Length: 104
Image 1: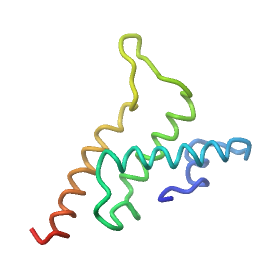
Image 2 (image 1 turned 180 degrees about the vertical axis):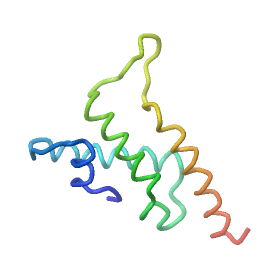
Image 3 (image 1 turned 120 degrees about the vertical axis):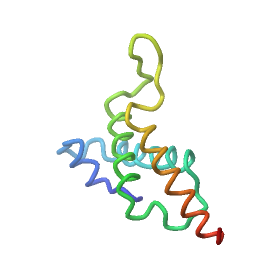
């Protein structure tokens, strides 16, 4: 995992071990969601990537605090505010790395 359980617990200010297994699942789900949105062909792209790490933590925070679909009164949102800009940033950097990898 790019983001550790201890990093997530510190960011979410969780002191107990009660939800550790749930948080680990949320970390995996958040990372998979982001990687699926961006791409998985550039080896090492997500290693030591602060944009990715923060986006994972934001998604885990969202999953943990909203255990079902959320709504702003008008529309249901799957991805919380702030994640889409992170995905766009990651996609741009990812595509540049992919082009370098392919020799373009």
